[in-house]
Image 1 (cartoon, rainbow, N blue to C red):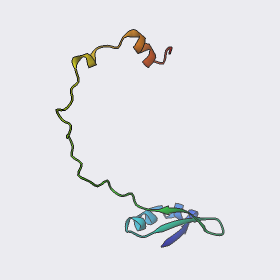
Image 2 (image 1 turned 180 degrees about the vertical axis):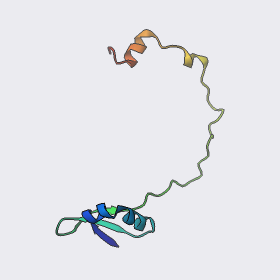
Image 3 (image 1 turned 60 degrees about the horizontal axis):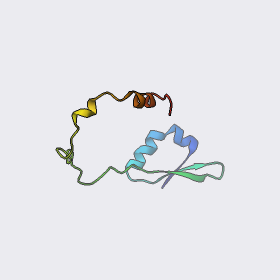
Image 4 (image 1 turned 30 degrees about the horizontal axis):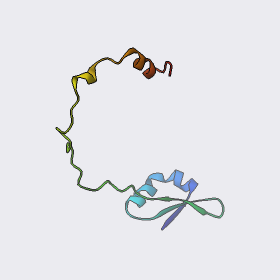
Length: 82
């Protein structure tokens, strides 16, 4: 496990990120006692079998979707009244 003070982390952030990405534990410490405050870890990529377009053709938007809003509703969207 690699330990670095906050000052060292500010100075060498890219190196510490590289170490974390390579699987090494990086601990950032604070104060004279070097109290651990943050652990630097990589973000795990989203895994799974996600498929784009799996809902294609299962819904529809009718032509009324594009109709103008009624005046009272339009005023509410514009922040006028309640």
